[in-house]
Length: 374
Image (cartoon, rainbow, N blue to C red):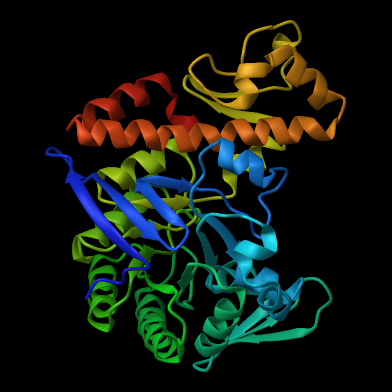
């Protein structure tokens, strides 16, 4: 049965790869895939206004349940009318369950079958998350898409631990679905590290439980690129074609290209805004660092092929000047460019898929980049 508030429409598959063009239908509008989704951890994309997001043609915006639980508290967001009203973003939103913090705050948490006890990174207080609590918190936040509470494990891990973690993630996914009372779209998360057997098992068991979409977790956390490719390749073949596929935490050009070739539809990452704040820009000819002396008298745009506000209005020389003078506007303009670059990349990819020339597009783009910049 089709959920008329949220569903995925697969329009076309590239004839030479598993790359897919589709439309994601949400309560806050319809958006084409593949898509890159900016991250607004605390209900705000760092340095970027909502007007900027509309202008750069962003779609889904992410926020994080763990962080919003600490500040301002999910009950505050609920009283405001939900995440979209709270942050005044008239577009679709998604919340991570807090599962990534099981990995990122490994030194400040303990795991049991019931859930995870975190040590609040702000003041040291204890904070407990279970699948049921995570779902309740996400329902209070009110995003269009919510995620199952899972365990994101480090790479590498032993087969025994990966298997134990996958089984727990599946039990937590079922508990979370059973606890859900809202009409939000709920995604299951495929784990299993780089083990083919366990990735397949996790994906198939999640499909049996049944979700509105499926995410691939535990990838791009420090493993070699060839292992990252395995993680994606071991997951997507076992996910339903009529449901969206979301690769969590990926924002580099090379990784996005590899994942789309293998049938992934959605991506998110803090990378574009994080590296922008340090002066690093993504361009159609590879990465550049605006701090370099050679840009002091360079009166050309960051990227002549980019249509973003920053590239249309400012030169490298001016942006470098703002950056070295530590002007706040520098980080905003650079962040804007990097986000629009990835959003535009996905627009170009969609066109290539529709014309059955994805491999040609990918190979041409790779030639413009050095492998170390991926």
